[in-house]
Length: 173
Ligand SMILES: Cc1cc2nc3c(=O)[nH]c(=O)nc-3n(C[C@H](O)[C@H](O)[C@H](O)COP(=O)(O)O)c2cc1C
Picture 1 (cartoon, rainbow, N blue to C red):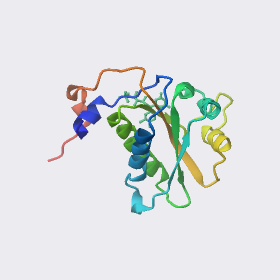
Picture 2: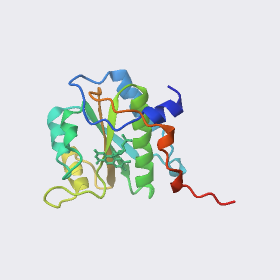
Picture 3: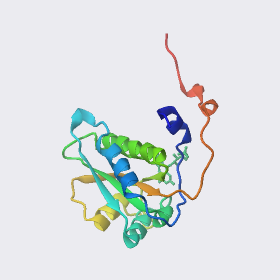
Picture 4: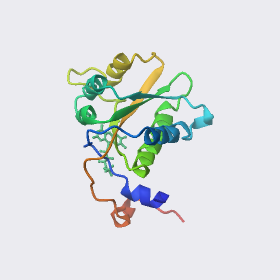
């Protein structure tokens, strides 16, 4: 697939087969995150790969809604960034997460972004603090989100260029 095909075929996949993720494919996804652009090239991101079922289950409860499917995933890549190193930790983490989502699509893996930063759990606690506790992250690391990954068990239709809403675009001159 060329980049345009990946951009159209990429969908958020939330159902996964109970099969391991091929090691080489996972490495390719992580390589895309590690090589993603960062402000001032500071590279503040840390990627925590979780494959253990009990930890995936714990992370699936880190926020109140929108993350339950993580317990069925083959792996999670938790994207955190050192906020003391870079004030652009949200941007740097988000770009890395997006690059890995696209790389996963190219590798034939299903993946979906799970928002953590700014979200709360069922008791009103911060999702970020739950992730910090589960993974034992140091205080300066802020978690942008989690990429749930797996061998896809659903195949939604690719996007079509005609769906693009040019009403969102304003041309000046
Ligand atoms: C910043 C961001 C946060 C997201 N958070 C979640 C989430 O917490 N749970 C979820 O199921 N999907 C999440 N998604 C996926 C979106 O719901 C999805 O991209 C959108 O519905 C469009 O579907 P598509 O990706 O298949 O085109 C998130 C996407 C982005 C970009």
